[in-house]
Image (cartoon, rainbow, N blue to C red; front, top):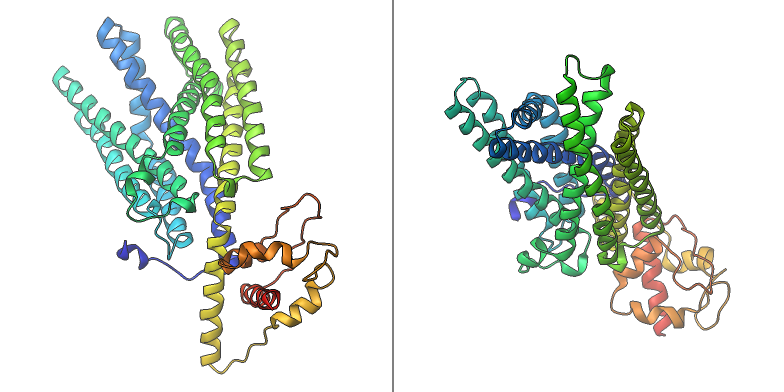
Length: 424
């Protein structure tokens, strides 16, 4: 992966925070788009299969309309698909620099596959120009091939992100472990179910809600769309929570946060609301239910994006602290070479001014005694620096340590000082 290191830009702690914000922002748009692309295409392919098997014209009409709608949205496929995928890739290249994570390689391959799958789907538009059965069959082969490649690229996206969020598995020789992790597989299968619900919701929304509904649609075709999409949406929504809960159970402890649990709870709550909207439409179809279902699914994707990014940010705290420290060191050396003198507090100054009010080496003050907590950091000062920069509650007996607003270099300085004094 040496060629990818050429894209690396040294990151300060503030820049790393911006990268995490960008990832969260991108995922809020990217994941719903991927789910619609995948869900609608799966609905279309299944309808095409049923239509050919049963010689049912409405299935074939539905499949054709879905695919032609997808391939007509070129700008969206580029801006919300390809551009977003590469934005995610670039952000993780920065966050995982100087590691042995295979996630970057997996994400790079996935981005290239996504482009290839998009090209295959677009070929459908050109091979459909001639109105002949042979040409129709050839065009559908391109769509199926494009879908298969895009499915692989979406799986690569999940596998790469899950590898990034699990530092314990960072090993350049364990590519197969990173690529086929249980967490990536569970998350991907869950995403397929959620995509089927999202695709069904989008079909109902744009056929019956958007701009007053689709014009000149027959009652027979309208009833067919409802009969086809609603059961799929209900089954998908009932199955998705199972995979979501399993996914949370498989998250490493380093990725568990209060924000994650809150976001997952809210996502499950809106899954419940969405399921009731679908069930209501199956009993009595109302346009407001179709609109509510669409908005509920958008909220589900929002909270899932927040939960995923919270897990990634938490898991990469130590890596982020190390990158910020390296940046600070290089930055200070550069300024020093230019004759700019920097004043940085020493570890002793920081201990006297900030730490001594709550900590002592041999007794409990407000916080625990250093002799009780520092042994676990003896061989891992980077982890201690990470905790100082991002303190969190560990022992319920003591209050949470407030963030002292230290620079990475200052955090390293106080970490070195207290370790030396503790050993003495």
